[in-house]
Length: 101
Ligand SMILES: NC(=O)c1ccc[n+]([C@@H]2O[C@H](COP(=O)([O-])OP(=O)(O)OC[C@H]3O[C@@H](n4cnc5c(N)ncnc54)[C@H](O)[C@@H]3O)[C@@H](O)[C@H]2O)c1
Image 1 (cartoon, protein in one colour):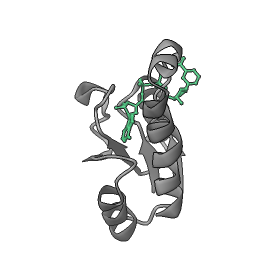
Image 2 (spheres, rainbow, N blue to C red):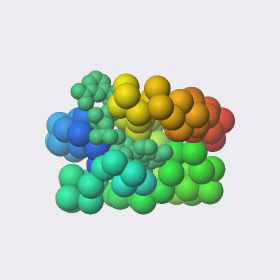
Image 3 (cartoon, helix red, strand yellow):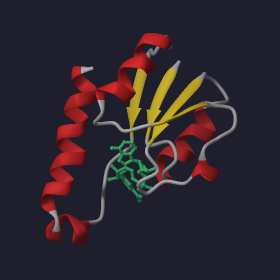
Image 4 (cartoon, rainbow, N blue to C red):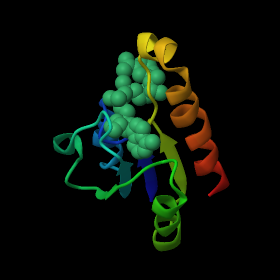
């Protein structure tokens, strides 16, 4: 089973459309920029946050995750200059939480 984080976003949702043809897929997304209608019905969906261990741990406990594909980043250049801490928090710190978990 493959965990796709950010699977309700642009890149993640397109990846999932291909992946579900071959693998069982679980999607984690907090809908900060993603959309419910982009989540493929053939996946298990969990609404939660990459930076929150309380959201991540039950997934790894309940499902036999073989790989994680991480597309849950903020990626607007202008916003990242105006508000760099948001980007360090979500793109760096939250990813460390995932790796720790
Ligand atoms: N869009 C492009 O053309 C493009 C090209 C190359 C690389 N990328 C990279 O792909 C990644 C995704 O980009 P995108 O364009 O799909 O962005 P997007 O905003 O459409 O998708 C990001 C998804 O991650 C979710 N998300 C964000 N933070 C989260 C968190 N803390 N917990 C759970 N979910 C969270 C959002 O709700 C959204 O569904 C980025 O790393 C981006 O740099 C994008």
